[in-house]
Length: 141
Image (cartoon, rainbow, N blue to C red; front, side):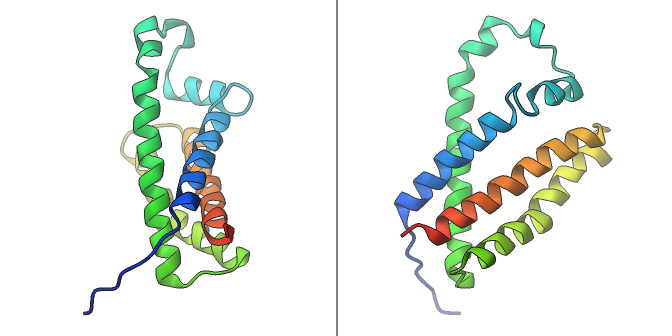
């Protein structure tokens, strides 16, 4: 098998990463699903102490790096699959979600006895994120 070098658009990857962070912050905010997510996860917002809040920047950095890796790998999949249209980007995001993210997230219901509603909140976040990231990576000039 010959080595194939893939060129990616690093600006599009950075934009997709930032947008994924915005989606995540919005998704888990009290405006959308944050309150339900905390309740279903067993997190008492009143018991969150200042030390957890002070360490939030570390969590945000790791989340940013994680989303950056996801955007880079997704960009590589897009190039390898020769995805060029919005329809194809949406389908690719969906199939990656269905084949990888959804089954992994289902494990928390099956093996960790987490509520199914928590699975729905978390897995739908990844579905939206993957589709939006795919669209950005395909359509960005």
